[in-house]
Image (cartoon, rainbow, N blue to C red; front, top):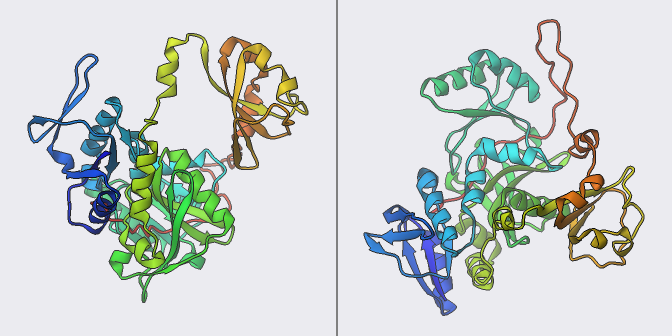
Length: 417
Protein backbone atom coordinates (compact mmCIF):
# COMPACT_ATOMS: atom_id res chain seq x y z
CA UNK A 1 0.00 0.00 0.00
CA UNK A 2 1.29 3.47 -0.87
CA UNK A 3 0.85 6.08 1.84
CA UNK A 4 1.60 9.80 2.01
CA UNK A 5 2.31 11.77 5.19
CA UNK A 6 1.63 15.49 4.76
CA UNK A 7 4.18 17.28 6.92
CA UNK A 8 6.47 20.28 6.76
CA UNK A 9 9.03 18.62 9.01
CA UNK A 10 10.05 15.06 8.21
CA UNK A 11 12.33 14.90 11.25
CA UNK A 12 9.89 15.85 14.03
CA UNK A 13 8.95 13.03 16.42
CA UNK A 14 5.37 12.49 15.25
CA UNK A 15 6.14 12.44 11.53
CA UNK A 16 9.18 10.23 12.04
CA UNK A 17 7.19 7.71 14.11
CA UNK A 18 4.44 7.54 11.50
CA UNK A 19 7.01 6.96 8.76
CA UNK A 20 8.77 4.24 10.78
CA UNK A 21 5.50 2.50 11.65
CA UNK A 22 4.29 2.50 8.05
CA UNK A 23 7.65 1.22 6.75
CA UNK A 24 7.78 -1.53 9.41
CA UNK A 25 4.39 -2.76 8.20
CA UNK A 26 5.62 -3.08 4.65
CA UNK A 27 3.90 0.00 3.22
CA UNK A 28 5.53 2.29 0.71
CA UNK A 29 5.47 5.67 2.43
CA UNK A 30 6.67 9.18 1.63
CA UNK A 31 6.69 12.43 3.60
CA UNK A 32 5.60 15.30 1.36
CA UNK A 33 5.84 19.00 2.21
CA UNK A 34 2.31 20.42 2.38
CA UNK A 35 3.30 23.72 0.78
CA UNK A 36 5.00 22.17 -2.25
CA UNK A 37 1.72 20.99 -3.75
CA UNK A 38 -0.06 22.72 -6.61
CA UNK A 39 -3.81 22.23 -6.87
CA UNK A 40 -5.29 21.82 -10.35
CA UNK A 41 -9.04 21.66 -10.93
CA UNK A 42 -10.91 21.26 -14.18
CA UNK A 43 -14.21 19.65 -15.10
CA UNK A 44 -14.18 16.05 -13.96
CA UNK A 45 -10.43 16.05 -13.36
CA UNK A 46 -9.11 17.21 -9.96
CA UNK A 47 -5.31 16.81 -9.86
CA UNK A 48 -2.32 17.52 -7.64
CA UNK A 49 1.20 18.44 -8.67
CA UNK A 50 4.20 18.12 -6.36
CA UNK A 51 7.34 20.17 -6.94
CA UNK A 52 6.02 20.92 -10.43
CA UNK A 53 5.38 17.31 -11.45
CA UNK A 54 2.07 15.47 -11.55
CA UNK A 55 1.62 13.50 -8.35
CA UNK A 56 1.68 9.73 -8.67
CA UNK A 57 -1.22 7.75 -7.22
CA UNK A 58 -1.52 7.15 -3.46
CA UNK A 59 -3.83 4.87 -1.51
CA UNK A 60 -4.02 6.87 1.71
CA UNK A 61 -2.99 10.15 3.30
CA UNK A 62 -2.10 10.99 6.91
CA UNK A 63 -2.38 14.79 7.27
CA UNK A 64 -0.11 16.57 9.75
CA UNK A 65 -1.32 20.07 8.97
CA UNK A 66 0.27 22.68 11.22
CA UNK A 67 -1.55 25.77 12.45
CA UNK A 68 0.47 28.15 10.28
CA UNK A 69 -0.60 26.37 7.06
CA UNK A 70 -4.20 25.51 7.90
CA UNK A 71 -5.79 27.14 4.85
CA UNK A 72 -3.42 25.68 2.28
CA UNK A 73 -3.14 22.37 4.13
CA UNK A 74 -6.88 21.78 4.22
CA UNK A 75 -7.07 22.71 0.53
CA UNK A 76 -4.53 20.00 -0.28
CA UNK A 77 -6.40 17.45 1.84
CA UNK A 78 -9.67 18.40 0.16
CA UNK A 79 -8.09 17.86 -3.24
CA UNK A 80 -6.97 14.37 -2.22
CA UNK A 81 -10.57 13.70 -1.17
CA UNK A 82 -11.86 14.82 -4.57
CA UNK A 83 -9.40 12.38 -6.11
CA UNK A 84 -10.96 9.57 -4.02
CA UNK A 85 -7.84 9.10 -1.90
CA UNK A 86 -8.63 8.07 1.69
CA UNK A 87 -7.53 10.71 4.23
CA UNK A 88 -7.14 9.92 7.93
CA UNK A 89 -8.87 13.24 8.66
CA UNK A 90 -11.07 15.21 6.30
CA UNK A 91 -10.46 18.83 5.36
CA UNK A 92 -13.71 19.85 7.06
CA UNK A 93 -12.79 18.01 10.25
CA UNK A 94 -9.39 19.72 10.40
CA UNK A 95 -10.96 23.13 9.81
CA UNK A 96 -13.64 22.53 12.45
CA UNK A 97 -11.09 21.72 15.13
CA UNK A 98 -8.42 24.26 14.23
CA UNK A 99 -10.54 27.36 14.92
CA UNK A 100 -11.28 27.34 18.67
CA UNK A 101 -14.43 29.42 18.29
CA UNK A 102 -15.77 27.28 15.46
CA UNK A 103 -15.02 24.13 17.46
CA UNK A 104 -16.89 25.44 20.51
CA UNK A 105 -19.84 26.60 18.40
CA UNK A 106 -20.24 23.17 16.83
CA UNK A 107 -19.96 21.30 20.13
CA UNK A 108 -22.35 23.68 21.90
CA UNK A 109 -25.35 22.26 20.06
CA UNK A 110 -24.84 18.87 21.67
CA UNK A 111 -25.20 17.50 25.18
CA UNK A 112 -21.48 17.43 25.87
CA UNK A 113 -19.43 19.26 28.49
CA UNK A 114 -17.67 22.35 27.13
CA UNK A 115 -16.28 25.49 28.80
CA UNK A 116 -18.56 28.56 28.81
CA UNK A 117 -17.06 30.70 26.06
CA UNK A 118 -17.59 34.28 24.89
CA UNK A 119 -16.47 36.01 21.71
CA UNK A 120 -16.91 39.76 21.38
CA UNK A 121 -15.73 42.43 18.99
CA UNK A 122 -16.58 45.68 20.75
CA UNK A 123 -14.62 46.67 23.86
CA UNK A 124 -17.86 47.80 25.49
CA UNK A 125 -19.09 44.19 25.46
CA UNK A 126 -16.09 42.67 27.27
CA UNK A 127 -17.35 43.33 30.81
CA UNK A 128 -20.68 41.61 30.14
CA UNK A 129 -18.91 38.66 28.51
CA UNK A 130 -16.71 38.15 31.57
CA UNK A 131 -19.78 38.21 33.81
CA UNK A 132 -21.59 35.66 31.63
CA UNK A 133 -18.82 33.07 32.06
CA UNK A 134 -19.00 33.51 35.82
CA UNK A 135 -16.55 36.32 36.44
CA UNK A 136 -12.79 36.46 36.97
CA UNK A 137 -10.41 34.71 36.87
CA UNK A 138 -10.81 34.05 33.16
CA UNK A 139 -8.72 32.65 30.36
CA UNK A 140 -8.03 34.91 27.39
CA UNK A 141 -7.21 32.76 24.38
CA UNK A 142 -6.24 33.44 20.79
CA UNK A 143 -8.48 31.73 18.24
CA UNK A 144 -5.56 29.78 16.81
CA UNK A 145 -2.53 28.61 18.73
CA UNK A 146 -0.67 25.52 19.84
CA UNK A 147 1.49 24.38 22.74
CA UNK A 148 -0.07 26.95 25.08
CA UNK A 149 0.98 29.97 23.00
CA UNK A 150 -1.58 32.79 23.11
CA UNK A 151 -3.24 31.59 26.33
CA UNK A 152 -3.28 34.03 29.25
CA UNK A 153 -4.75 33.72 32.75
CA UNK A 154 -6.33 36.99 33.86
CA UNK A 155 -6.93 37.04 37.63
CA UNK A 156 -9.24 40.08 37.55
CA UNK A 157 -11.77 41.55 35.16
CA UNK A 158 -9.69 44.70 34.82
CA UNK A 159 -6.60 42.77 33.81
CA UNK A 160 -8.66 40.74 31.33
CA UNK A 161 -10.04 43.88 29.73
CA UNK A 162 -6.55 45.34 29.37
CA UNK A 163 -5.19 42.16 27.80
CA UNK A 164 -8.10 41.91 25.36
CA UNK A 165 -7.77 45.57 24.40
CA UNK A 166 -4.05 45.10 23.70
CA UNK A 167 -4.58 41.98 21.62
CA UNK A 168 -7.47 43.47 19.67
CA UNK A 169 -5.35 46.53 18.89
CA UNK A 170 -3.02 44.19 17.01
CA UNK A 171 -6.04 42.74 15.16
CA UNK A 172 -6.01 39.49 17.10
CA UNK A 173 -9.30 37.69 17.72
CA UNK A 174 -9.64 36.29 21.23
CA UNK A 175 -11.99 34.12 23.26
CA UNK A 176 -12.94 34.55 26.91
CA UNK A 177 -13.34 31.40 28.99
CA UNK A 178 -13.81 30.71 32.68
CA UNK A 179 -10.82 29.30 34.56
CA UNK A 180 -11.70 26.24 36.64
CA UNK A 181 -9.77 26.25 39.89
CA UNK A 182 -10.11 22.51 40.57
CA UNK A 183 -8.38 21.72 37.26
CA UNK A 184 -5.59 24.27 37.55
CA UNK A 185 -2.55 22.92 35.72
CA UNK A 186 -4.13 19.52 35.03
CA UNK A 187 -5.94 18.01 32.10
CA UNK A 188 -6.53 14.67 30.37
CA UNK A 189 -5.68 13.94 26.76
CA UNK A 190 -7.31 11.02 24.98
CA UNK A 191 -6.24 9.86 21.54
CA UNK A 192 -9.26 8.80 19.51
CA UNK A 193 -8.80 6.67 16.40
CA UNK A 194 -11.77 5.35 14.46
CA UNK A 195 -14.33 6.00 17.23
CA UNK A 196 -12.33 4.46 20.07
CA UNK A 197 -9.80 5.70 22.61
CA UNK A 198 -6.45 3.97 22.01
CA UNK A 199 -4.39 5.83 24.65
CA UNK A 200 -4.88 8.41 27.38
CA UNK A 201 -2.67 10.41 29.70
CA UNK A 202 -2.89 13.10 32.35
CA UNK A 203 -0.74 16.20 31.95
CA UNK A 204 0.31 18.15 35.03
CA UNK A 205 1.90 21.59 34.99
CA UNK A 206 4.99 22.32 37.06
CA UNK A 207 5.39 25.11 39.60
CA UNK A 208 3.06 28.07 39.20
CA UNK A 209 2.45 27.42 35.49
CA UNK A 210 -1.26 26.89 34.76
CA UNK A 211 -0.65 25.41 31.31
CA UNK A 212 0.17 21.71 31.40
CA UNK A 213 1.65 21.47 27.90
CA UNK A 214 4.61 19.13 27.60
CA UNK A 215 6.39 21.88 25.65
CA UNK A 216 6.10 24.03 28.77
CA UNK A 217 7.62 21.52 31.12
CA UNK A 218 4.47 19.67 32.07
CA UNK A 219 4.88 16.06 33.16
CA UNK A 220 2.74 13.24 31.82
CA UNK A 221 1.37 10.10 33.42
CA UNK A 222 -0.73 7.22 32.18
CA UNK A 223 -4.38 7.32 33.23
CA UNK A 224 -7.23 4.82 33.09
CA UNK A 225 -10.14 6.79 31.69
CA UNK A 226 -13.51 6.76 33.38
CA UNK A 227 -16.19 5.61 30.88
CA UNK A 228 -17.71 9.10 30.91
CA UNK A 229 -14.41 10.63 29.77
CA UNK A 230 -13.93 7.96 27.11
CA UNK A 231 -17.43 8.47 25.73
CA UNK A 232 -17.02 12.26 25.75
CA UNK A 233 -13.73 12.05 23.84
CA UNK A 234 -15.20 9.80 21.16
CA UNK A 235 -18.34 11.92 20.77
CA UNK A 236 -16.34 15.15 20.49
CA UNK A 237 -14.23 13.69 17.68
CA UNK A 238 -17.33 12.37 15.92
CA UNK A 239 -19.19 15.67 16.17
CA UNK A 240 -16.28 17.57 14.62
CA UNK A 241 -15.85 14.96 11.88
CA UNK A 242 -12.42 13.69 12.98
CA UNK A 243 -11.33 10.06 12.69
CA UNK A 244 -7.97 10.73 14.39
CA UNK A 245 -7.95 13.28 17.21
CA UNK A 246 -6.38 14.32 20.46
CA UNK A 247 -9.19 15.38 22.80
CA UNK A 248 -8.19 17.51 25.78
CA UNK A 249 -10.57 17.43 28.75
CA UNK A 250 -10.71 19.04 32.17
CA UNK A 251 -11.64 16.98 35.19
CA UNK A 252 -14.35 19.37 36.31
CA UNK A 253 -16.65 19.06 39.29
CA UNK A 254 -19.51 18.22 36.91
CA UNK A 255 -17.56 15.64 34.91
CA UNK A 256 -15.50 15.84 31.73
CA UNK A 257 -15.30 19.19 29.98
CA UNK A 258 -13.91 19.29 26.45
CA UNK A 259 -11.33 22.01 26.24
CA UNK A 260 -9.90 21.42 22.80
CA UNK A 261 -9.89 18.86 19.99
CA UNK A 262 -6.73 18.56 17.93
CA UNK A 263 -6.62 17.06 14.45
CA UNK A 264 -2.81 16.60 14.49
CA UNK A 265 -2.04 15.56 18.07
CA UNK A 266 1.59 15.26 19.08
CA UNK A 267 2.62 11.64 19.63
CA UNK A 268 5.74 11.99 21.77
CA UNK A 269 4.03 12.74 25.08
CA UNK A 270 1.30 10.11 24.74
CA UNK A 271 3.64 7.35 23.54
CA UNK A 272 6.14 8.14 26.29
CA UNK A 273 3.48 8.12 29.00
CA UNK A 274 1.60 5.02 27.90
CA UNK A 275 4.11 2.93 25.99
CA UNK A 276 1.46 2.48 23.29
CA UNK A 277 2.27 2.41 19.59
CA UNK A 278 -0.12 5.22 18.70
CA UNK A 279 1.62 5.91 15.39
CA UNK A 280 1.16 2.28 14.42
CA UNK A 281 -2.52 2.42 15.35
CA UNK A 282 -2.98 5.41 13.01
CA UNK A 283 -1.22 3.62 10.16
CA UNK A 284 -3.28 0.45 10.72
CA UNK A 285 -6.47 2.50 10.72
CA UNK A 286 -5.63 4.10 7.38
CA UNK A 287 -4.64 0.75 5.86
CA UNK A 288 -7.89 -0.86 7.04
CA UNK A 289 -10.05 1.92 5.59
CA UNK A 290 -8.35 2.60 2.27
CA UNK A 291 -11.10 0.63 0.55
CA UNK A 292 -13.76 2.91 2.06
CA UNK A 293 -12.99 6.54 1.13
CA UNK A 294 -15.04 9.31 2.65
CA UNK A 295 -18.46 9.63 1.05
CA UNK A 296 -20.33 12.93 0.85
CA UNK A 297 -23.81 11.49 1.34
CA UNK A 298 -25.68 14.69 0.57
CA UNK A 299 -23.80 15.19 -2.68
CA UNK A 300 -24.22 11.60 -3.83
CA UNK A 301 -27.91 11.50 -2.96
CA UNK A 302 -28.75 14.40 -5.27
CA UNK A 303 -29.01 11.83 -8.04
CA UNK A 304 -31.98 10.29 -6.20
CA UNK A 305 -34.42 13.16 -6.24
CA UNK A 306 -36.71 13.22 -3.24
CA UNK A 307 -34.61 10.79 -1.20
CA UNK A 308 -32.25 11.55 1.66
CA UNK A 309 -31.11 10.85 5.21
CA UNK A 310 -33.32 12.00 8.10
CA UNK A 311 -33.18 11.81 11.90
CA UNK A 312 -36.47 10.56 13.39
CA UNK A 313 -37.11 11.20 17.07
CA UNK A 314 -39.18 8.68 19.02
CA UNK A 315 -41.07 10.30 21.86
CA UNK A 316 -44.02 12.42 22.83
CA UNK A 317 -46.86 11.61 20.44
CA UNK A 318 -44.69 9.79 17.93
CA UNK A 319 -46.57 6.90 16.28
CA UNK A 320 -43.35 4.89 16.48
CA UNK A 321 -43.19 4.82 20.29
CA UNK A 322 -43.54 1.33 21.77
CA UNK A 323 -43.46 -0.45 18.43
CA UNK A 324 -40.74 -2.65 17.03
CA UNK A 325 -38.92 -1.51 13.92
CA UNK A 326 -40.67 -4.22 11.89
CA UNK A 327 -44.11 -3.19 13.20
CA UNK A 328 -43.43 0.53 12.77
CA UNK A 329 -44.40 0.47 9.09
CA UNK A 330 -41.23 2.33 8.09
CA UNK A 331 -40.23 -0.24 5.50
CA UNK A 332 -43.68 -0.02 3.92
CA UNK A 333 -43.04 3.72 3.56
CA UNK A 334 -39.79 2.97 1.68
CA UNK A 335 -37.74 4.04 4.71
CA UNK A 336 -34.70 2.04 5.84
CA UNK A 337 -33.34 2.37 9.41
CA UNK A 338 -29.56 2.79 9.29
CA UNK A 339 -28.87 3.18 13.01
CA UNK A 340 -30.55 3.72 16.36
CA UNK A 341 -29.17 6.14 18.99
CA UNK A 342 -30.12 5.42 22.60
CA UNK A 343 -28.64 6.78 25.84
CA UNK A 344 -25.59 8.15 24.04
CA UNK A 345 -24.87 4.87 22.25
CA UNK A 346 -25.29 4.13 18.55
CA UNK A 347 -26.63 0.76 17.41
CA UNK A 348 -25.88 0.24 13.69
CA UNK A 349 -28.29 -1.81 11.57
CA UNK A 350 -30.71 -2.46 14.46
CA UNK A 351 -32.75 -5.64 14.23
CA UNK A 352 -36.38 -5.46 13.27
CA UNK A 353 -37.59 -6.92 16.60
CA UNK A 354 -36.02 -4.09 18.61
CA UNK A 355 -38.69 -2.07 20.42
CA UNK A 356 -38.49 1.71 20.11
CA UNK A 357 -38.27 3.62 23.41
CA UNK A 358 -38.95 7.19 24.39
CA UNK A 359 -35.92 9.32 23.50
CA UNK A 360 -34.61 7.08 20.71
CA UNK A 361 -33.27 8.61 17.51
CA UNK A 362 -33.47 6.72 14.23
CA UNK A 363 -31.13 7.60 11.39
CA UNK A 364 -33.06 6.66 8.27
CA UNK A 365 -32.76 6.76 4.51
CA UNK A 366 -35.87 7.11 2.44
CA UNK A 367 -38.26 9.30 0.53
CA UNK A 368 -38.84 12.67 2.18
CA UNK A 369 -42.51 12.78 1.23
CA UNK A 370 -43.15 9.56 3.17
CA UNK A 371 -41.55 10.78 6.38
CA UNK A 372 -43.03 14.27 6.80
CA UNK A 373 -45.77 13.23 9.23
CA UNK A 374 -43.18 11.49 11.43
CA UNK A 375 -41.00 14.57 11.90
CA UNK A 376 -41.45 16.60 15.13
CA UNK A 377 -42.95 20.06 15.04
CA UNK A 378 -40.82 23.16 15.61
CA UNK A 379 -41.58 23.29 19.34
CA UNK A 380 -40.41 19.73 19.84
CA UNK A 381 -37.31 20.39 17.73
CA UNK A 382 -36.35 23.17 20.11
CA UNK A 383 -36.81 20.89 23.13
CA UNK A 384 -34.75 18.17 21.49
CA UNK A 385 -31.89 20.58 20.97
CA UNK A 386 -32.07 21.40 24.69
CA UNK A 387 -31.95 25.11 24.10
CA UNK A 388 -31.69 26.90 27.44
CA UNK A 389 -33.93 29.93 28.11
CA UNK A 390 -32.03 33.19 27.96
CA UNK A 391 -31.90 35.39 31.08
CA UNK A 392 -34.32 38.29 31.03
CA UNK A 393 -32.75 41.65 30.24
CA UNK A 394 -32.58 44.31 32.95
CA UNK A 395 -33.74 47.90 32.57
CA UNK A 396 -30.69 48.72 30.46
CA UNK A 397 -31.25 45.86 28.05
CA UNK A 398 -28.28 43.85 29.33
CA UNK A 399 -28.72 40.21 30.20
CA UNK A 400 -27.72 39.16 33.68
CA UNK A 401 -25.01 36.52 34.10
CA UNK A 402 -26.11 32.87 34.17
CA UNK A 403 -24.91 30.47 36.80
CA UNK A 404 -21.30 29.57 36.18
CA UNK A 405 -20.45 26.14 34.82
CA UNK A 406 -17.34 24.10 34.07
CA UNK A 407 -14.70 25.95 32.09
CA UNK A 408 -11.09 25.71 31.17
CA UNK A 409 -7.71 26.94 30.30
CA UNK A 410 -5.95 25.91 27.13
CA UNK A 411 -3.40 23.20 27.77
CA UNK A 412 -2.85 21.99 24.21
CA UNK A 413 0.25 19.82 23.77
CA UNK A 414 0.59 18.94 20.12
CA UNK A 415 3.24 19.63 17.61
CA UNK A 416 1.90 19.07 14.15
CA UNK A 417 4.81 18.29 11.94
